[in-house]
Amino acid sequence: MANQVNPRAFRLATVHGSDAKWFGRKDVLKKFLEQDVKLREFLLKKLKDAQVDHVDFERMNQNVTITIHSAKPGVIIGRAGAGIEDLKKQLVGEFFRGKRVTMNINVQEVSKPSLSSTIVGQQIAADIEKRMPFRRVMKQAIERVMKAGALGVRVKLGGRLNGAEIARVEALSAGTLPLQTLRSDIDFARVTARTIFGAIGIKVWINRGEIFEEKKA
Image 1 (cartoon, one colour):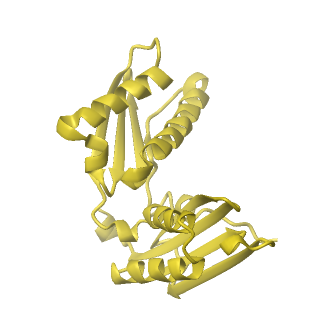
Image 2 (image 1 turned 180 degrees about the vertical axis):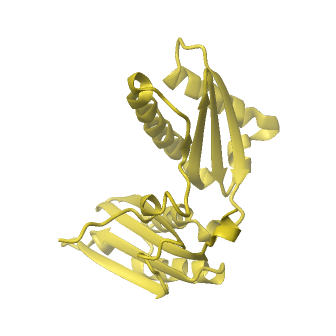
């Protein structure tokens, strides 16, 4: 049987870097890793309307720096930075209560949201939750991605599509998607759409071109 590997994890040593930039001893490694996972889940759920692409973490002594990459940074920042302060208080109260931690939250704008698999998956999930026909949603998403300059894209949906009695899997693709070429910048994401008929799984692959050592440097 074939083993399916996450395209981003497959390219960690060549094209992509890690979302967590910190070093921990053996006694705190599990705690920090679990905390990063819970923080990321909390932020993605809390900032659902901000179209968050990914979240980076940096730790140094008692300092924690969180960088949020979003297509709508204004939704997170709020008026005069009030949104950032409220978010910081929630995170400290939820995850660092009683600990001496200095937290910094940075927000960076995603320049091309149509080339982000996470944002494209979130848009597909929002349309499906509005009961739009799934084939039309998939075709529109593929057209947006290809117009943004992608070399290839694949969208895969699984579940009770359009309220069918039997769950099935449907997929559409365009362009080229070389999953075994390590220098190909393949962006992959899994998103779940919650409908009245149940959960629909969404997988998105986007080929953003090849990265060579000169470009990477």
